[in-house]
Image: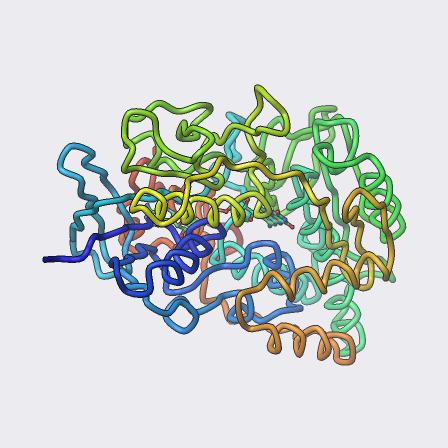
Length: 462
Ligand SMILES: Cc1cc2nc3c(=O)[nH]c(=O)nc-3n(C[C@H](O)[C@H](O)[C@H](O)COP(=O)(O)OP(=O)(O)OC[C@H]3O[C@@H](n4cnc5c(N)ncnc54)[C@H](O)[C@@H]3O)c2cc1C
């Protein structure tokens, strides 16, 4: 008799934890299959450090095969769920189609960049949700400073040295905080080498948000710390402000100011992965509806959690759990427990978790944190944050710590490999985890991506 098959779609925070917990519970008595486009778990919270050259990309990419024993990895992007036939279809990295039947299905496909209908943004901005975007940004920043240093046109040099981040949530705040330190260090290296950057001015970073404060979704004390650190560092914080239009030359702000720039970084938030919509199952703001046991009503064999699922928040009745790694990882554990319970291993339990606080990486030795509600700032917050990340990482801990040590004693590497080009990381993508291929499609062929593969106006040949 064939073993029961549990298929998990998506190896992020929720899926990775679900796979690990299930493999430990079943010890081979069920087949656990993990379908993911990449062969690694991406530790997203450290991505801003990759774009700023602090961490090498493989440090935050934890091998699935190397760390998940007893789990069969299938490389591919799921593009269809047939609930009646109990099977999923997928496209593998070389474009071939495949299918897998399941006895239990766990959907943990996460989220993609959120868009706003602002003219020019889809063409000229880049998001920050996956590894390709982080690598693109690191190279793009490095290239802008190098080209600014060699330009004989002061206006062009100033535009290349100006970076606009839209969205001052934790992603935008961390990208701006690290970005400013990175560009300042690159500019100093070019000056020392005798490459002219005008005067002593350092690169300009603007952080915009329509909300009245940075980190609007977090504790006000974290906002105050982040505001103080960024302002001191020279980041221009514009709250109550957004972008009216983006063009090849720059961005027009709400108040009519035109900022010349080649760098518009879009961090306004995320929306659930479009696969949710394609299942045809009931959703709430794009998140798949589940009950407190993380089961899809009417389909007891289907479970979902993490960013892609609308999980009732039992600590705040009437609300759904926020889209954070903290919730996703715990939901992954609960979903594994409940799948096991459906086979008679233990009792199923509802998902309930009280927030343990948040950490925000402000670059250098700075951070803001409120573990268990206690507000911390400066090097102490930074130490707490780094300890937390090292504990939360399922692998590569020594390598990450080594990179942090090297960054503390050596200058940043001012080189760009240019392997990820602007057109391969469009803002509007259902697959931010994959760089688009020259044929204009990702592995999913632009699944659920209006305008997928549309040519972006290339900026400065990048
Ligand atoms: C820059 C940044 C910093 C952050 N910092 C923090 C933080 O400090 N603390 C915190 O709690 N949260 C943080 N978050 C949020 C956190 O990363 C997310 O909430 C978390 O990743 C959600 O986990 P998930 O498992 O639902 O989705 P993900 O971790 O996004 O994983 C989804 C997985 O599904 C895969 N997938 C997608 N579509 C398909 C498909 N069709 N077929 C197969 N596989 C698919 C993806 O490749 C991916 O591997 C941060 C987010 C960002 C962008």
